[in-house]
Image 1 (cartoon, rainbow, N blue to C red):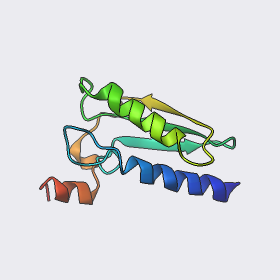
Image 2: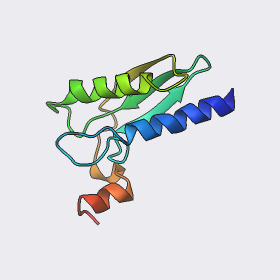
Image 3: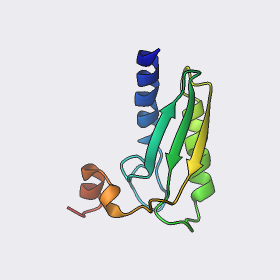
Image 4: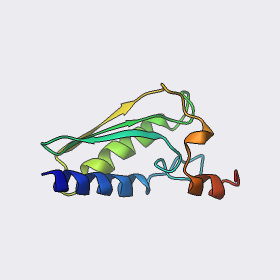
Length: 105
């Protein structure tokens, strides 16, 4: 079961690396917007994430895209997204690749 959970977690990361904040040309995973990925024993996935700003006009679209695309992964029984703003996002949460892409390194 642990192998299957690990496989699903890896697939979730892959899916998240293909979801982009429309205002920033970097995926939500490398932007550091994903705080936690939890896969339970029934293969339900809970993603805890934030946004670059609490008043992001695309918030609903991004959250819905994460929820729908994660739920479409083989073996996943369903998904839930918990949107939080604590701790607040800042650019130090971005991956090195994201910082390079945005010219911050």
